[in-house]
Length: 153
Ligand code: HEM
Image 1 (cartoon, rainbow, N blue to C red):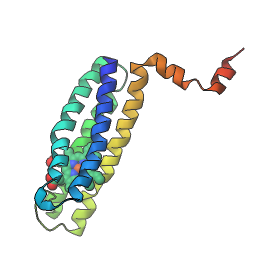
Image 2 (image 1 turned 90 degrees about the horizontal axis):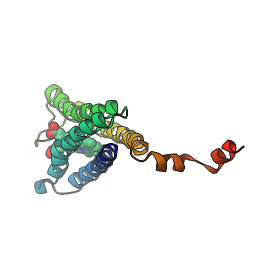
Image 3 (image 1 turned 45 degrees about the vertical axis):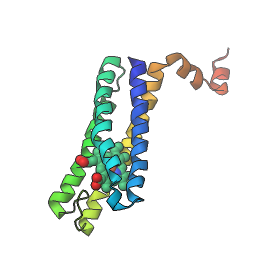
Image 4 (image 1 turned 180 degrees about the horizontal axis):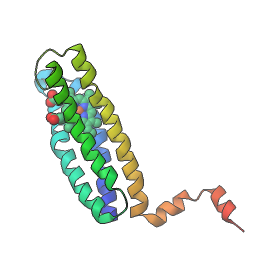
């Protein structure tokens, strides 16, 4: 199960990096092509499914990674909450062709910063799950020439 947990964590990392790329695809394309839909679909469907499977894997792996797995769900939900706050307080809706006010821009752009936080937590999760899945390989890799020398009699 610890290997499954690692594979899921690596898939989440790949999906988060893909989200940044797909945001670029949305920005650098014609609005009428509606390519931002790829980013929205990955954020609404692919990531939630991976994150929920990862919670189950984390609980079964029993490697003290549950706070990361649960935290990522909260952070992904925050991506939507940021939009809701902007829409409710300023009327700026990134899903519709409406005027985005300055206050709306300030609030909506936290979506990008929170995306960076999601990326950081996902990297931490992968770094936690790797030694759980491959303890011998991780131990061998952490042995630097200096640490081997220091351990020598
Ligand atoms: C440069 C970074 C990013 C930009 C510029 C960006 C921008 C956007 C925009 C404009 C939308 C609305 C798309 C539409 O009109 O259909 C959106 C939706 C969404 N984004 Fe991002 N995003 C970024 C990074 C991320 C990251 C890293 C994640 C998650 C890991 C993420 C998760 C989501 C989700 C879940 C939605 C759908 C929200 C909902 O419908 O409730 N975004 N993003």
